[in-house]
Image 1 (cartoon, helix red, strand yellow):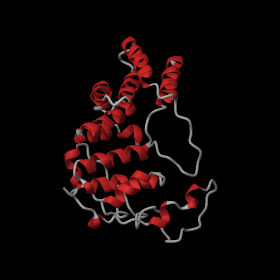
Image 2 (cartoon, one colour):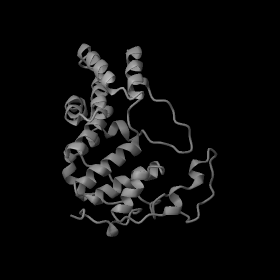
Image 3 (spheres, rainbow, N blue to C red):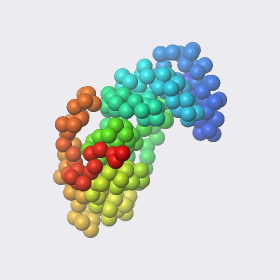
Image 4 (tube, one colour):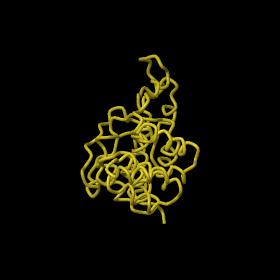
Length: 236
C-alpha cells in the first residue's frame, strides 16, 4: 500500500490532480472499504473544482466523522456548495481525531503516519469551522473558532483578518510574539502580561462542544474575543 500511496502523493504534490484522481479511483475500486483511498479520491476532486463529487466520495466516511481526512474534504466541499450545517456536523463528529492534533510553534513538526499526510491539524479545522459558521450567519461561534485557531497557530492570517472583519477586539502585540517561537522554554512575560494571543484570553476555558450544531448558540464565547463588538449577522 505504501508504494501506491507515495505515487498518489507524488501526483498531488505536482498538481497532477487528474492523474491522482484516476489512480485513487482504481485503488478505491480494488479496496472499497479503505477510507484512505476515498479521502485521496475526494481530495483530487476538490482540487479539480468538482465539489459535488468531492462531497459524494467523502460523504460515507466524512459525514459520520470516522475519517478525519474525509470529514475535512467533505466540509471544504460543503463550504463551496453552501451546505454549511452539514460541514459543521462532519467536523464536530470527527473531533476525537483532530482535537489532539495541535501545532506547537516552539517545537519541530513531527511527521504524520503516511496515511495521514493530508490530514488537517487542530488550527486548520477550527479555522474551517469558523468559516462555516460565518457563512451560516453565526458570527458569535465563528469568533470562537477563529480565536482558537489563532491561539494555536498565530501565523493563520485568514483567522486574524476574519476576526477583524467581524469586529472582534484583539491584542495585536501578542499575536506575533517572538517568544512563542523560541525553541527554549522561557518564563519572561510578554509586554501586556498576558500569555494569550487574544485580549484577556489567558483565563478563558473552552466549554464542551455540543453534539448537534443546532445547540451552538448556547456556548459561551472566550473572553479573548469581545463579542459585544462582533456583528452577529453579516451586513446585507
